[in-house]
Image (tube, rainbow, N blue to C red):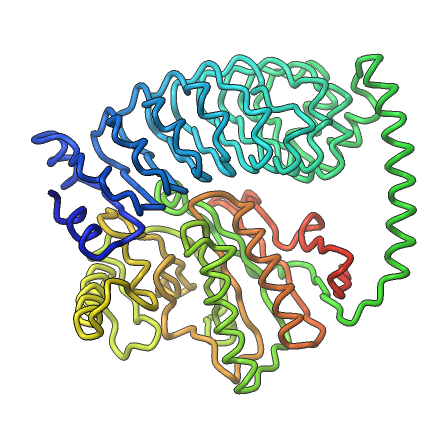
Length: 511
């Protein structure tokens, strides 16, 4: 039995991470340790960045598995027994050479599916999976748009299809009620259906590097934002006759709905305001390409005019811990970090990666600077000592998240203008930028291995809960994230963010 598997067994762990060169060497010499599949209590399994080429049939014994991460391996085909894991919510098979996904996968209660960078030419029909929220099939060989245009997919928010051979967008794409992001760059699309403009929540649309026949539209796609593109599609792109009639009815219904919403808004008794200010042009977060294989997604915002008391500060820390266990899914989905803005030197932040022995950080609550590798080893020793001292099989605090970086060849980190590490997600922040009772301006940073939507969901929830916790109005300033060439990647909060139910007594006011 491999030591990691034995440890998970004796300590009754629910998570197991096997990654990197050492694991590859073991697999090459003796094959994968099949005793992994006797750990029936596992709900998170990550086998990544190895030379594993086949998943044994024993995988179906992991009946409690909710997250399965198998990215960056050597799979050409994937075991259909995974289709029997009826509690699976997150599936990551990215960066392999898989050619076919079994049809049985479409019956799983999947929320997030990541199939990026494989060799797929077709996909199962996911039209019955009502929980599906994010589907990423970028950088494959799809010739047709995935079969996802179904009224049943009420939660589908993100469709990432960049770098395929898709020639058409289906006319019935407008039946997806929650669609907010569509990535279709670098395909073979020549025309855009007018029905695309009926996707009322669509805020991010990327159609670049397609052979669009309409030259005016092509120019808009290269130069303009989603709103201008959608407006042009609405006015100039053809519809099917049947859908045109439906669109007309839909437009009338939407107008009626808007009027009703206005009436509802005037009747809502808002107690608090959440004021959203435009991004500071002199501040942004630059995201480098190296994070794509480690922890790709990041969103951020600034909270101004913070007024902590000893009691509210304590409650805010408790709130973060609660969200890490709930909406962040024990940091498997996302991680929250906070920084005192006034403790940072002027200038941009940079989100990048570093080798474990080269990442230098003064961890939160510690007096000395150390490498990422030293911090991991120290935390692991502390965790083992605490477990023995208290005679229990579980870890507490940040110790219980160590498995998320175990065996990683690169660690993600956020740097200030002086190139000092202020954040090492998903483990800890730096002590040099920690928030305190006297903090008045705070940066909130959320990172995820899953999707931008996961980051957005966490930030929306956190800001809402902060208003209700402080029982006061809140001022939030947008933060832009860009690539190294200053191309915009995201802005949070955008107009599509912070959409609360009418039962939430918070009115969002935007500049």
